[in-house]
Length: 207
Image: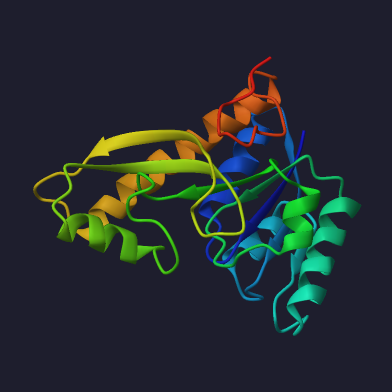
C-alpha cells in the first residue's frame, strides 16, 4: 500500500509512519510527501528518508484551481492508494477530493464533533478542552470532506484530562495517542481488515 502524507509543520506523525513502515509494523510505504510550508520539518524528514517531497501552496500556485490540479497530479503520478493529512493546515480542493474520495484521512487532536471545525487546530484545541473542564479528550481519525473536521469518523481513542493538565501537557499525551491510533488504522487497512474506499455513511467496510 502506498501512502501519501500531507503536513505543515514538524512532521512527527510522518516520522512515526515512516518508522512503522520500515520496521514492518505497517505493511506499506510512504510514496510522497506534500507540504504547504517550504521550510517545514515534514519536508526535511521526507528528504532524509529518501521520500519524494513537494512544496505546493499558494506561493507555487496562486490560483486555487491550479493548486488543486497540481496536488492531484502528484498523487496520481506517485500512485497513492491512501492520503493521510497529518497536521496539514489547508483544505484539499474539489478535484483531489473527488479523485481520492473515501481515501483521504485526517487526524484531529480531540474527540470530534467537539472541538473541531475551522480554526480549531494545534494548541487552540487543547486550550479549549482545558478551559471547558472536559473530563476526557483524545484523538480522532476521520474521512476528509470539503468541510473542516466534518467527514465520517473512522475511529477515536480517549484519554482522561487530568486535574493538573495544562494545554501543553494535554497536547503531548494526545499526540502520542493520535499517532498510535493512526498507525493502528493504517495497519488494519494494509492487512485488509478495513477496505478502501471508506463508505460514505462512515461505517468501516471490512473484508
